[in-house]
Image (cartoon, rainbow, N blue to C red; front, side, top):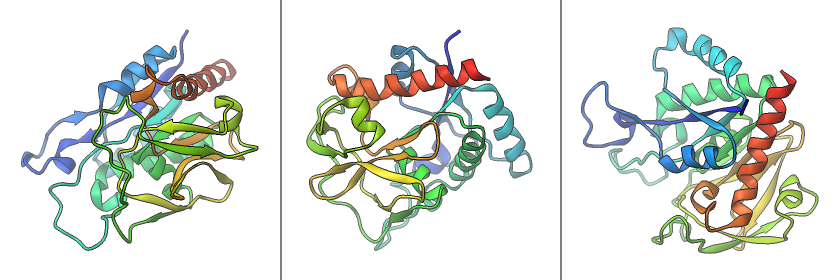
Length: 245
């Protein structure tokens, strides 16, 4: 049996300025689903739970079923009032934030493989005790080119699992983020750093597999063997977790 990967999503009520309904849509980019499939996993999109009374119980039940947790990126903040600083993750999408936080806490407690992409990487950093930099909008990291085209280089740090997986000291990545991690949580290291000093990849040194990337390997998997290796490694870890349950 292939590992079941829970893929988080966004809620249009929180992200679409034109969505004035109370129901809206739950959505996630198809690339996340296809990437899981291509690497040998079974994707399962996780609907956001907004009822606070059942939130924790539902998150625990979800984690008891899946073999890996993939926190997706995405979710614009175009409808938010103009501010001099970047809105925090919880200000941007408060319902999603609380749901993903519960998923993260329960998944980590079980030793489940966790992979966060872009916003998902930032969630891992913040929820587990790191700090985001909300003081300004990050410049030079939101490309206009399609996601399958890398636009800048990152250094892969020595003595990290990332270095063991990609087996190079640098790689080209895409970039679509306007906020960044200030410092990583205790028990984590920055395993990938851009030429201008932005943390682009983090990994836990105390968990079997808790990784985050600011870039989008799911969009580069067909054009970059190195990006595909990262996703393959996550699914491999999920398979190992499934077999150990």
